[in-house]
Image (cartoon, rainbow over all chains, first blue to last red):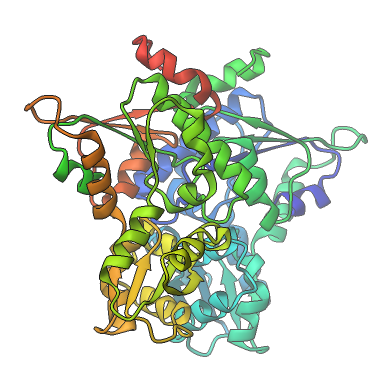
Length: 255
Length: 255
């Protein structure tokens, strides 16, 4: 997601918040995920951001649209763009969506795809995120689990990868579903929506990236490797004190 | 492990340290895991513990025996007791061991089992820990992955569950390996070793349990549910300040 945003908004600064101390969000209760999202949005608002992209399907499904009312800057999720992407791509109107338990159980994708006039098959794939984080995206385990999760898939022509980790599994999923199904992820469409809303870049210098992480820097760098590496500064945060941390960072207090 | 220790040492107080902010350890570099173990042991020593049980196979494989030289209290790992358990149980001398990538790649189990005169088959099962943490221990995913990981298992009569999470998968693993294979876990034997070393309990009151967690209390409680629940007090810790935290806790400073 950061990559897609950076390629459309190369002169903007980005803050990437990675809640490694509390992931996975996928099977946690909706209220808990909503609370995490609310804390993080408050932290980012204190830093003075222009807008917030909820680049996690589970958090988007659990915390939106309410989160938008809690902060004073625009908040974009990844689900509406994913639905829009599927609507553009499908020819038969038969689409599928896979995601975490939290995302699929929320029913948000299913409702929005139905509202767009599409027929929907949905399935939770709780182990996919771990395949990616374990660096097993191209392993025999990935294929075994993909065949398991997609065994009951009906005839569709479009499959939404409804979790920001899943694009890393593209080659395995494509192999299992066959060449007749188009895989769509919401990263590019979300970046398009955000870029259109923000308009012209404020400067022509190269944008900087700062990562805030809750679970320790070396562990974050190790995990980030498998989803494409990290550019920019990485700053550790105490997850138990997130509510006050934003003000401290803005005032230049060392954490 | 805590359960096994508590049942043998009911009057002892226990401190359970859960590094939820930095798990999984299983595929992290040996030096990183060793660093985590060293920090945590230092923290526990500052609290004034009588001894430290490294109740994680990956940390035992990566950090022992060196960790024992770093602190002034006895340190017990889970690998020697696991090897001892297998030696007691096997009749044919053909044993297997499964664990994380870190544990199996360290070769520690294989070397110690060979030294005990046993023939060893070993295999890493990196996704097993996630099945347990996702609450999927009795799912069809668990069976699919167990069949995958155990497909090449030769004729053995004893299989060491070389990861503290794996006993939760006992019923699935037993189903896949069949009734002729005895599953052994090191929890009970480790508790026996520790109880023998510590001797008589210091009092006859009920022992208390305190949990220190690095990844946020609600997220810890949610995950702990799937491995048997939590009794006692749960205290959050800032993983980025672990080195100083022990002294603060001991001095009664609020964290």
